[in-house]
Length: 533
Image (cartoon, rainbow, N blue to C red; front, side):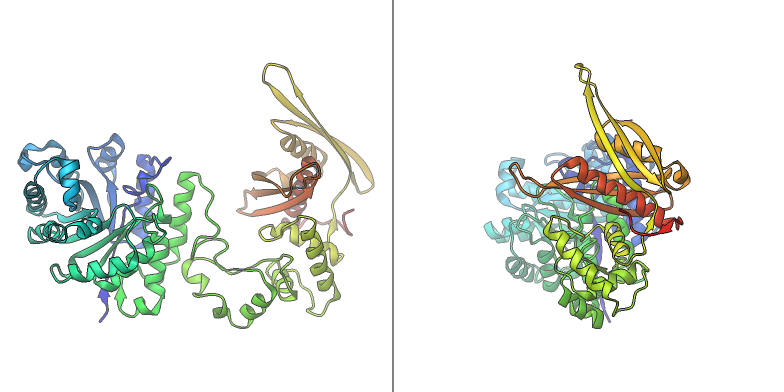
């Protein structure tokens, strides 16, 4: 019989403490729905009464279907009764199913921050928990700075936690509030606490200031706690909180945990963890972390030729879990570290049929290695790689040749800058010239190129550039510039292309040209089979 572990998400509350993060009411609703669908046990919606957004969220949100919507707050103020503390009553009346209160458990903070006696603090914890239980709500106490408090005054920290448990708290959560506790300390301290409070009523809440939040959470589970708190993508103040996107797959997929524990998240729902991660990044307008464990674009990316050969024979050699189980997929990168296995696998992924013994594979590999010496990097620019491969295979349709281009930038002296571009192409032997203007030289070149390619208008009109990155590969008068462009279309396709040159305009145009060519390839546009010059 496996023991039950409970997942408590505090992205909407503790995660909102992150510098620059300010969720709207609708943001909170979208995230709550996604977390509920994933299967977390608790969604902490915020602190009703502390700010208009959190108050409005609890007033308007329709509620979760399975997770317990939780309101956060402070214990009642010392010297006042529960009924005479308006802020505390607002938490009780928020309409949540559970209430999580932060209570001081370090005697130093009781004295300096609260300015009350140790006994008054314990009374506030006890009275607050009893008031929550009297409303038939689930009561939790976050014992703030518990580990520091335990080290400073073991008996008092335990007395605070025990007061909450004895008063009826479902969960007594041990908080590493400043993130400075290490895994071996967490293990030892939790092991002592479970002698006073059953582990089935203990939770863990860790911060990531020493990059140990996930490790500390796992150490606490091993020592006996049965609720784990954290945030999506490790969001949180300073260095963040324990990352649930790392913790949840670990608990469900690693045998040491999966055979002993169960959570409210089923294996068939586990792939949603990546969607929730991406949803948060989308709401915050952040680029997803490619190197995020389990869900990042590079989490199952393989580059070295020897590694790729091994992965093809036995994926478990370099993949600790099946990527599909967390909603991810294997990626075989092509670079100067690549071998023939990388090239062949990438061609198969691109649905480019080629015999494994075709001499063109060696040419493609040699061309990749040479270009990466010049500054190219094909790790994440699959579109440009496919174009390179088709060129070496003599299969790239000849949509157009570039005759030349010109860009001018004018400033009217009043702060208004306009970029004008002219691009000349040769299409089926006919020379055409297009012009364009934009708020920058790349925008102008894009407009001019589209003006030339009127015959392909139906293909490229729903294509747009969504990201443009520039990297200077070396410094000085001979600096080389690498430009990467990301494009999308209305059909849900996304692709990245690259250009390298000492001149940033030339590098940008190369990436832009590849982006257009790849769009035409995606759409299956026919042209004379020949290489683009």
